[in-house]
Length: 292
Length: 267
Image (cartoon, rainbow over all chains, first blue to last red; front, side, top):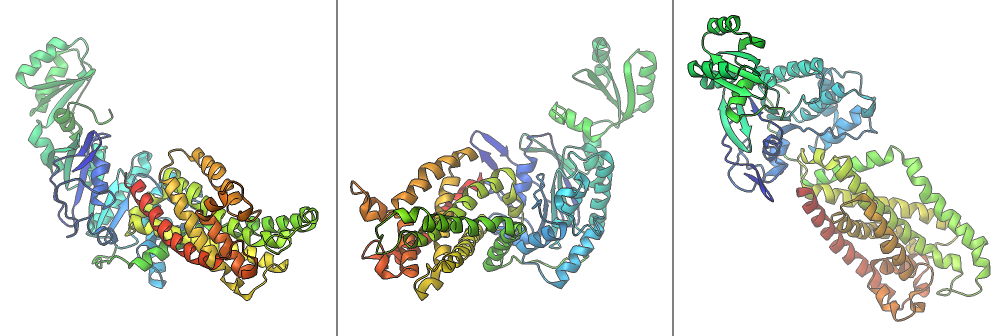
């Protein structure tokens, strides 16, 4: 639990992350994702409740926990005037890492994140995508047992984001336990074994991405422009699950053909029939979109 | 990243403090020539100006010395005071608020205590370095009059710890970087005047002499006078006690400052 003056940022969150799995905390801005990940990463103290990370209480045994963790926070903190290698050396120094084996490790990781040969470049000369990759490399210097990533792809363009997903998937295959926070549904669906939806500091749903959808909604959805179709929506709502969020109407059904038939019968504007996504689950559970 | 990741252990306190110190050294030494040039040139110009200029109009002795020789130990105190004060105010505030450097450090085995204690030691090291450079300038001008002057770097270190500690107290409280102007203009500048920088404290009016004894800088300046000019040229007869006060203040103010900054970073 984490309280600020008048706000309880994280409350009644109960989650377990088995080793070797990837867990995604999904939620809108302000849901408490960052606060929770900082508590797990032993960066913020908590005001109540119990927490065990890799067998340690993260606040009481901060250094022990942090020695075994790789952390990629939202703010990209580098010593901008220094070159790539020096930045990694300094960061490794905080873990007590030095010497020839460590230099080899640096080279290995630069290769892994495709920054080979960039050793002598000043960090301030790197592009946004490169900086993010350097953050990943930096978080892996100490061979972490758990990698914590707070919105690792926010603000990246789609190409870079997909490359980042590829990198994280490789790490997962190597057996690394990963906790990531995100407000991208696709990111959670692509990477995570389990997804927890965090809303107003509470974990309101948790399961494998596919189960999360099937538990809460039928597999198909018809989405259309709701204006002028209020009565139709009410009528359809009697037969199935229909919701309206802003200008868009959503009608959920287990039968795709039925939805397509309705599209043919009614003159819906900008109608589309698609499979139900995590975003729909999120909308249903919280009554709001992720971008708000 | 290897398949069977070894169980890492947290590095020892000494290793962590050294790592913080090393970070500051590397960032600073990248531009060492630019950074250290003022430390050499400012006292040189000052001694030239006083020795060949102003000093010629001052026909009296200060603590039994010519005016430039009287000023020389005080230059060591000012240098080590300002270098630490700037580092632990503007420097620390920029790292805290703008660079977010401490956020990055907190994601590693470093604790808040490590971060600020390591930085405090770095401030002390800067004081050591700068006072050593100024001491070489003083040597060139013939102002180092006793062999005890080898202690100058250690005294510079202690004085920088004192002023880094005081600056931490200010930084832990300041909300806006511009407010440091008050600290320097209303705090440190008059402090220099009060502490026997430009004339002996016993010549202060209205009993301000006793206020001077309560300031940290006075004790530093007297300690420098002891080792640079010799016991015959101090401002007070009990100057031998000043090094003890200096050591005590370094420990107390350093620890208090670190403690306050730990709290500031917690929010």
